[in-house]
Amino acid sequence: MFCRPSHESLSCQTGSLIPKLSVLFGVTFVLLKVLQFYWERKKLIKALEAFPGPPKHWLYGHNRLVRIAGPKEYPHAFPRWFGPILPSIIIHHPEYAKTILGRADPKASAFYKLLVPWIGKGLLILEGSKWFQHRKMITPAFHYDVLKSYVTLMSESVKVMLDKWDKRITERRSVELFQDVSLMTLDSLMKCAFSFNSNCQTQRSVPEFPNPGKASAPVPPLILLTPALPLCMLSKFSFREDLGKMTYTTMCIKESLRLFPPVPGVSRELSKPVTFPDGRSLPAGLLSLSILHVAVCDKGTWSLLLPQVFDPLRFSPEKSAQRHSHAFLPFSAGSR
Image (cartoon, rainbow, N blue to C red; front, top):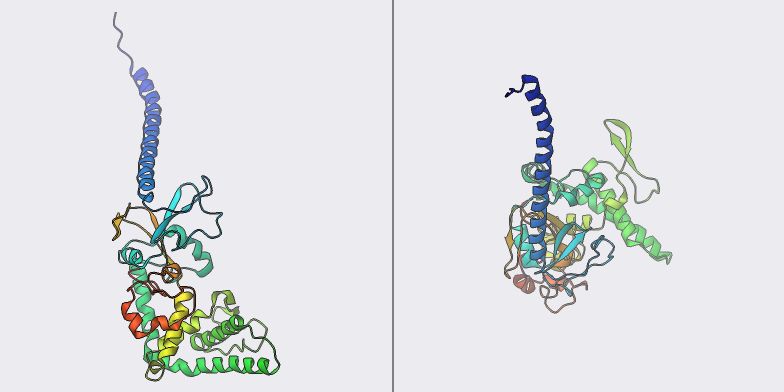
């Protein structure tokens, strides 16, 4: 005799089947993701084989290497592994930098997130429409007519620094240029941006300035300020009627920015495959790190002159006309 299963038994069987199906679907999903990761990694490693680089540790990658490589050892670009699973490509050739910076790839968040606790979410971190909005807001502040009013204030700060040097020379004491120029930068910044005379060049105590939310607030650490800032500010004036005639001074400023660019490198995450002029390609998803400092030191770009030697004549009119458009990028290039 055939017995039809009861409603309760069917419900019990269905209830026990659902967890099994969930586990099966979960395992299948994980296996598909593993296969996808394996396939993409295989394609990536295959693409990176076209770019010779320094040997890497199977676990640490290149993390433990103090100095990895440069243009001499590996022209154009080479792989750089952060641990065993996170590869990137280091670019140090102008033509390669032009290819990457000419695209609209997003910033590599893995790199830039490390800078947020240090410098906050400013123009260097922002991207896309938000970067454009903030950049548009501050552009008027750097208009030449606006900056003219700051010349006197910066000149006063420079005079204080020079007076200190004159005194030390008279006393036959050595001069620590980096510290003094950093203090002069801070003094200029406090006067121009906050209308506050900190006297930081002559006083040892950390200066404070009024803050609407608090009684006082400390100035950001001096480590955030380098001699590059006054050089950048001065370069803004190099096109004015008087300083524009100081051709050699402008060349010295540019050479200083070449050796010590305010933006030493930029990172991008490739949103789609890229093919370089020499035919080598990279897949989407790879982190690309353009080392601008190394790029501008490329021997092929800077003729036969030693790239690490300070030589303002590199920026003479005749040599500038022959230079690659992306050989001198102290502030990066392209979209952000």
